[in-house]
Image (tube, rainbow, N blue to C red; front, side, top):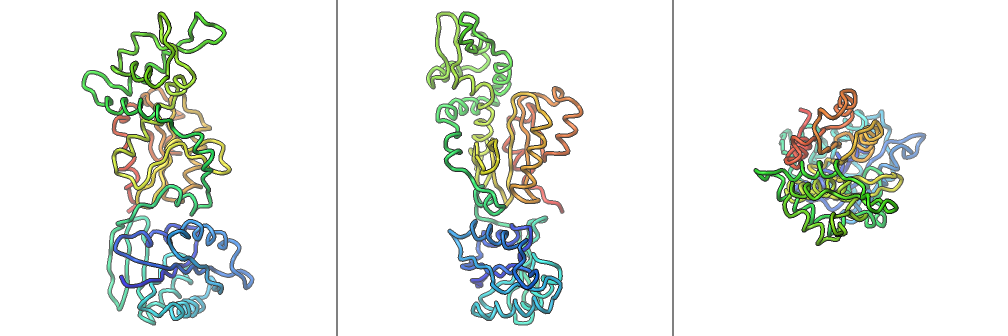
Length: 382
């Protein structure tokens, strides 16, 4: 593929213009975005879309919004403007026309322009994850083979900005990750299951009755035996305060057992699998109150994972549905991970979860969480 410039038609779906830039063995230096017009000017609907794409790609590519918009209902006008762009950027041998976006008349015009002058034509099938190349009457079909597209780029392309300061303050601590590493290593132990043990220990935390003013939570000595080495790890990481009779959790320890352990475990499981383009934990986004527990990318799709150790409410489901629809486009995926069985989830809530999220992962499959997330994200619609 010798072309250096990618000509794209703007639409609400941004990834079809971004994905070709990350296909291995393709090379582009420049992206030219073509928008539709409204009252003789660039449509206010698509100017922000162009800005999002420019912002997401500016560190790696030269991205421009063409100053002349096209009539969205005129194939001939689109053909004329596209041909002018091809001529402006060193001719058909150096330009690939991506006719995936825009209105249907714009797409027809862009196709005709490329066909007329002999430029390479490209259609991005995001559903089947394939590229279709057309040149001189020949069609070539190529599967996606993408370089990593990170969580931040996906969010930026969809008009969402990571609050890096807030994310840094919320990040999983080295201590949390070290203890979660022990849980991960023992998740498939034949004599005990560390994931099940963590759920039981959280459920059976009690308040320290000898110190009612502080009321620090403790885990009874016999429960620590359910996960060998966990007590020693928690002492080493400063999660518990040793007393004469019991081990009381401090704030860091309580937060870990109350829910952070599941976030840290899922984050580690996905990252250690080396099966994803990017994996991030506790991502704070401007304008969104709560963090994304875990976010991942694969094949230009964004996965949003909510980890819930307590009861599932309608608020969590609504939030996941909204995040999936607004953060990463129509092909993003949402996951709800719980450390208990589906039988503990009320039937009505379970039905809503199946409707609102891409996948519900419970204790039965928790030790395979990275495989399930990957499998779901690799699904195509046809």
